[in-house]
Amino acid sequence: MKAGVLALQGDVPEHLAMLRSVQPDAIAVRRPADLAEVGALFLPGGESTTIARLIEEAGLWEALSERIREGLPVLATCAGLILLARDLAPSASGRDPPTFRALDVTVRRNDYGRQRESCEAPVRVEGLQDPPFPGVFIRSPRILSVGPQAAPIAWRQEEVVGVRAGPLWGLTFHPELADDLRVHRLFLAAHGRRVTRSARAARSTPRTRRR
Ligand code: GLN
View: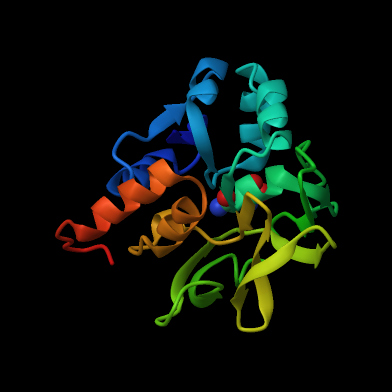
């Protein structure tokens, strides 16, 4: 089982670099044939309306929808979370993408206003010890409500900034832009033996910058 990053738009190079330092054979997913090769997928941050359009143009919408229904583990960050969300509350722009309606949350795009559009703030993530995770927030969506089929897994102070529903994880912040591999490792360790072995191997190699 390989892991892949949906590579249509957004912070794809960062995500791939991060993922490859945990799992070297991770691939970029651009076509249905790529999707068929992966056993876990990362949906990167970017512009959700654009990514949704490109998914459709690449002929990936149906295939991805089906894989998600079959239980594909997906770690979705920011725009990725928007695409997984069961419901979107209308955003101020009035331009909202279609979604896979897979993760039982309601979110609103770009809901923090200009002042808090982008920042870094400590995030508490279930399953990680101290120190808190450095949460990078960039024009992030706000999680307005968490439905009965999902559960919070990350908090910025008291606010929920991450949820999961079985193999689907959605975060409003960008672990791929932090100098910290713990969220990627946690997700990969939770999903599949092959990936767990790679994560262990990566842990025992010398590390310089990354924790
Ligand atoms: N504001 C973007 C959107 O609505 C998400 C931002 C991000 O992924 N950093 O799609």
